[in-house]
Length: 160
Length: 436
Image (cartoon, rainbow over all chains, first blue to last red; front, side, top):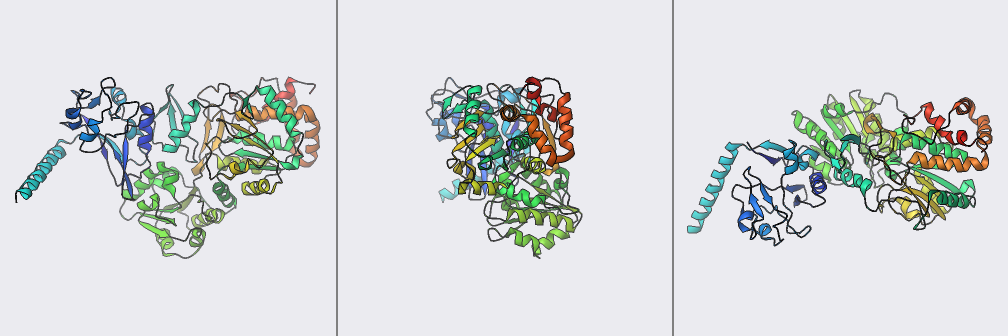
């Protein structure tokens, strides 16, 4: 079963250690963004590695591709820095700022995963807010139902 | 992979280092990440500088010797950075004694050193809070913005907050800061009046005292927080009920160790703020700094502001700086030393990387000592001192007479503070040139 990064906002103290570790591991290319939630908390913007990635669909050069193991990875060679994926991403986790002429994209620290270790951001999290856990299939199904219900409700509301 | 410790605050988190860079053993904050980068920084200083001009070590020391002759010992000051090890502080104190310099002080965050003053006032029965004490506490009393200074502690704070129903986190701070967001109770005081609250009869304090076990965590503040009084009253609070313990978190790793060693060894130790006042009034004209500005210049440091006022400013530094003479300094990853960290911990670090071109603090100070003594004659100085400083100096002379020649201070010989081997190495130059 594949593993993903989970965030518990109750624990997060907004120290940005995850962003620092990310920059360190990826040759000072900041793949992990941050957004402020009011004045109280900061939200690390992790890539969710969607089942049907909009960024991959939007990419004109097939640089973004979903791998067999479920990771959505960006090719260094194919990416031309057109920012189509940043526009397409519904969660806003791909930042429009280019680094070295290409778009920064979370690769879930594939080198560390191959070595059997956790991603850098999870390893360095000071408060224990970030965890690396297996995908709970039940939660996924519930989420799908919620999304479909929301779309349906929205649809009905518009028809009226 | 080698394991060492980050020393950029007194928490001292363990860090793993690989050939490529940092590996992540455990939680590490942004400050630790980016300061450890200085070791492999492209702008790292590899040769001494005299006014932006690269020179050799011998030329630099000839220049320093020539310049120092122009100043009386009363107008020379020595600062030892709070990032240097206990041994370095000891050797700097010896240097001050040899040069008859009466102005020696630990350097670092001014508020921290103020707090250390209060922390050193003796109170009977005060106990330091260890890691387990903080995690198992039922109530935390946090004075100041703890999580901004040491975000790694948020793991422990969270353990207390979500560990058991009814656990309390009381934060005393003037502003609604990051730590206050975690608090179950935030006591908002006027800036600088934390000490008044701690010695008074506040409902928040009663709530804290009613818990069966607790820890008082104090972070020195910048806004005239009466840091010394705060540290003192935190200590007093921990005495009032025996289940409460206290800890002070400093900005620089070895603030406590350097200050303690200098106080014990330094003949003319003065407080850091007093030294800065002396620079401001023009009483101190030349300044020697050891352990240097290892951190990049920050506007808050008064020392950097005043360095322009001194006629001669020698500093050891990892990066280029505004000093008259800059000596390339090895970081704590490249030198051996012992450090007194917060929470009563004591770490002995071994070098994990070679210092290319740079010299460790101990080597620089021993070079200084060599210069000073070859001119004045070590034996005369020590003998004169002996009259005033009684027994232990006599023992040191005996040890010095027994030593074998050594080619400098080797890592095996530098052990923790108070070891005689260090004293032996302190006299290594004497064995090298017997006529000197």
